[in-house]
Image (tube, rainbow, N blue to C red; front, top):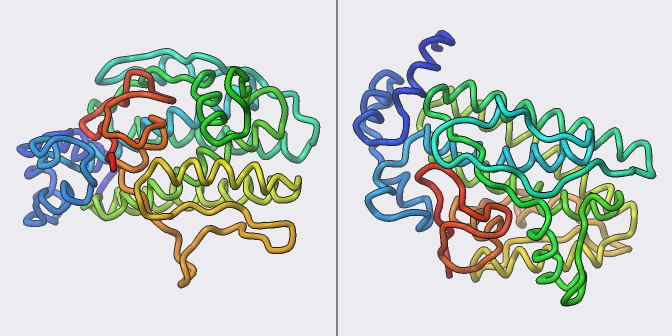
Length: 307
């Protein structure tokens, strides 16, 4: 539909403000859709003024924050290294990564899964940074240490004063991956209605599909290891953070598997950006930082929804 140079230029111009958004929409051939609907769909992720400025660039930057988190987690687990500095710069507060090391996998197939997912997540970061151009946000500060302990404690996997190391063994790694993957799928599905341009929507749908493959793989591996009870605790903990409605699903029981979390129509559920931030900030309250992002995410979509 558009040449690569034109697409990149439009995203850069869309940036994160309403004036540039009008230019972007006109160039993309979808002028007149407005920003009010997109702002309302965010679910109280930012102030009313910021909500009126939600653009495709803002939505993609929100996704980029999450991809930074996943890429760091998986690349440390699979290869023992995080993102190179040249892949972390951009707008907003640039932060480092606390925690992370290579996992000593006992099962060759799980080690292979980890490496493949790590490369995919790295490619997602590269793609979004390239697509966003000058509008891309920097990697915010990421905690891969205390955050997992806080999540595991809240879920009842460990007791007060204990620690949960996601890199200690492959079981811990899979449980930690479960925390991320389902959230990633629901985040992209929830953000899809906010993307106004078909070119970017198609790309987001492609990333969603990959994240769904990842989630299914992780859930299958956990089921094969008989970790249904531990997964259910994590699922319940996520459900306690993202609102009053019960959305999350575990992987089933020893007699009935639930590899694909979906509704009665076989459709995966969505989370608003605000609900996603509730989970990664590890709080049911409306805040702008915490958990895996101690200083918050970068971009105007940065506030959790609250109950």
